[in-house]
Amino acid sequence: MRRLRPLPLAMSALLAACATTPTPKPQAPKVQAPAPEPVRDISHPVMGTTRPNDNGAGMWDQLRGSFQMADCDADPGITLWARRYTQNPERFENQLAAAAPRLAYVQQVAARHHVAGEFALLPWVESQYRPIPGGKNMPAGMWQIMPTTANAMGIRVDKNFDGRMDVPAATDAIMALLSRYHDDLDDWRLVDYAFNAGEFGIKRMVAQHGTPSAEPVVPKMPVKAVTREHLVKLLAIACVIREPDRFNVSLPSLPSEERLVTVAIDNSMPIAHAANRAGMSTDELKDLNAGFRNGVVDSSASSYLLLPSNHVQQFRNSPLAAGNDTAPNVPGTTVLPPLGATLSASTADDDNKASGKHSDGEKTHTVKSGESLWSIARRYSLDVRQLQQWNHLQSAGVKPGQILKVSAPS
Image (tube, rainbow, N blue to C red; front, side, top):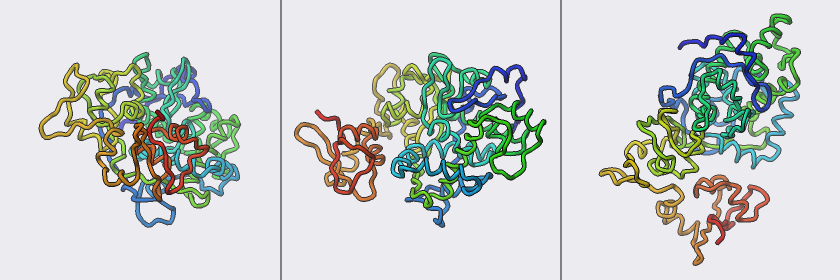
């Protein structure tokens, strides 16, 4: 693997910071539209709730095994922030479940670059893995990269495409950057400081004050409080992953079919066509491929789409006829409508018991044991907030036997 070479010092002075703090001063090669090599699934699917005392290997065990920094009790601030993250356990679980596919993808890219596992959790600190759009001169994407930083990294940002929101390209660029930081600084704590405050400033501090000792865990270097807190926040979310029982939370499972992979595209197409071709809702596909800004999957901007693994084969087997609004029927393949439209048909026996349709067209769902508002929302391709609004719920908690509206009130 080629190592990244630093950009000129003058360029680093132009780089701005990420939303939570000053961002890294990236010196990276051009990463726009990399080869669409699918990320290999290096962990085993977790079948059910994962606890730290589970014997089976899973994505959370894989992640814990890659951690290389301090544990929960190394600094009081770590447990303080861990408790802040989990003060509402149900909300935390829902947030982590929504982030799990992206988290697993980032984890695998981090492993490929030999980056400490804690940094797979960096987007939690920055954005909770959400594809946050950036305004003018504002950070964007789950890594919260500033426009000037993206320009220095060779990431395309224009009115049609924002590569900061391209999960594969941005993640690969950031992980390559973190790997080079560690080559230079030889301390993962300083890597986080450099990501937050800029590489050259941290290098100057090390030259003046020397490499920090192992204690205290949060190095007392003359950095801004927000930079020190950034490291504490990162160690805190890693702490929750280490010891979820300690904070009264469960870590979500991630079935193998929900893992994200890249799939090559040969030509441009409207996002709605690509979604129909993959058997997904347009919103689902746009959320995973938020870099496309004008409603078109532009193959000149990115040569791949990011899809859940269970939609890849259908996408490949269902080419769209140019200019048609729907995919043609190809012998030997099945073209599915968006997921929400097929749920009742594909699970008829179950849904006859669990859900119903009233004469006015309003659909309902009867909550079963083990279900959460998040899992019900995913089942019907809805947003949790929609379910809360339609059912006048003040929280994300639901109980078995509770009847929920799963369509907009008529």
